Length: 593
Image 1 (cartoon, rainbow, N blue to C red):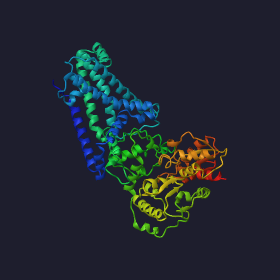
Image 2: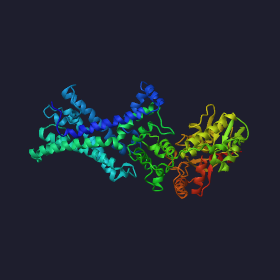
Image 3: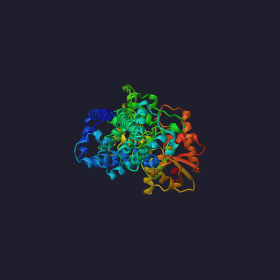
Image 4: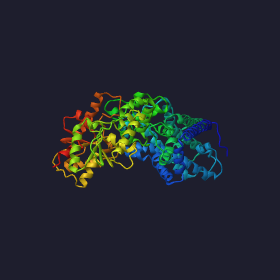
């Protein structure tokens, strides 16, 4: 059987270009990985990590479970296009084997089998299954068309604005399956066969269109189908649809414990090009929903970084609150990619700036418990006073790292892209902690907590947020506060909740001293206070505007006092409400006998 017709040429050329470019990209990215990452891959391949990665590929790349959790209809749209197309390919190959056995069939023979198989006996089972799958995919195409005009129906306030290359690929994708329906139906009209979809449409065509017109329509339809496939394949490696061939290896590499760092690496290319620009990250962004800034969201940051046109205005204008990270269906490490892009733009270390480190130890006291207030806590002295009262009530002898001032934890510099400068500060603080022999380090600042846990080498020193420390004191009955009738509501700080996964400790502490009322958006969905040290672009007025939207939700709970566990959040929320705003330590200290 001859498996070639002139209309196959666009498909063949497109497929060749696609595979060549994808293979070239993969080869370059993998070759440029650090040796340590290559060793991780070698160790991971024969391990259970490969099986776990395979399961995630099925669950996310094909079934799109994470998107289903965001919105079922949106999840169905993505699943029908990904899983439906995959099944069309798989069942199509099975159909070819069922007709011809295990003989070699060129790629176009599988793709255009309905055209070449008119002389073979029909198999009703495959006609039925292939029509069901084609209808499944077409339903997803219809939803995709509808989403461009009414995104709210699929749970999205906004969809992504695409560049020209994306639009070309998207238009080709939209026409692939309608063209396939028409092509297969015209062949059925001329030669019979087909299932409930192509066969029924073919019968209608046979009854209403002349044979000569059908022959011309068949040729045109197969040409359009092949051309749409070819155009999509050529455009795909250079468009957002490269994610189809990038998300899968990214999942495996992630399971082999590769990760992005504060310096750009080849692994970042897998993350950047795994973004499908679905736009799910747009709605959670408060810069868009509150301030109307709609060109800096993660989808645009990744797009601009991929094409080498990233501007500081985009890289710097992000709260790094993690709300988009929580929603990203591909689990791209968006905040780290922001950080290492800023490092490339900003990092200009000057050794002279570190002269002030010499003899800077201003710590006080002695004890195995150390307390690092942090810059922002020093600017909210009531928190510091409350912690002193709590330490006294618990009977802990404390080493105060910075009550009279000291060195910053380094995270604000890191968030600004000054990673080398931040590292110098981190080394100084690490030496200071070890010099004084502490075994537990407590901080009231989630920003400090995150950097202590993730970027410092503090083996042998337990790092606790003050919410965790206070909860431990309550559980061991070293603190016995009086429970009052005061109604509190709690704001989850970004770095404490989404950043460090601490949600329960503050709530348990609040419920020990009063009644807790939850706001509408809470825990992993909690909004940012707006005063993130990660954003160097928005104005003070814009920060206040965000804070007011947050405090409005907190006030709607009917609570008498707004509680948070971050000094920066406390200052920001205090500007946006007339209600009292207190740190967690304050309400505990007030309730002590």
